[in-house]
Image: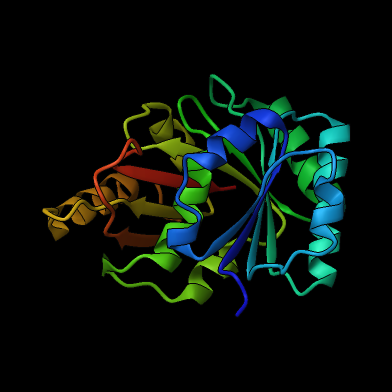
Length: 223
């Protein structure tokens, strides 16, 4: 059976971050960093989504991610998403232009975590809605359809910079990570915050998760 997602850690730091995510519970395959990484990629069973976690944002790191994406595509993998290291503040025009260039050259969806958002949060945002039962059901095609080659800013819900990113959004995915005692009110409040800032299409997901170290909600702002 094809994995829901293949997560490739292209560096020691993203490998440590990915290790905190329960890949098996979400039907994901994790390929950790190591000297034989590309040999393992060439024999991996590619998932219906491919997340490539890079430890740098420079051209060599992007080239490595693009190479891994092409190998997994030939092995039947789905949409490829490159997740960069977090930056401390909302990217300005020049930084966004570099992200757009990265998406064009890699032919991947390129995700830039902002502030406290991390590689692990990107995995949670895109994978949990597909893998975990929740109060808000979602058609997998909605998630896959978002992940075409373009740029994305990833924010944790409590990060104030999210409100400054939303006006530029074309589409927004909000993953509300609902604890067992949660109600639909949390989802409704999330939708209200987004719709007060943008008319962009909103995709809402509400997977029910255990109490863990992860955030209560994560927003992916597609530019």
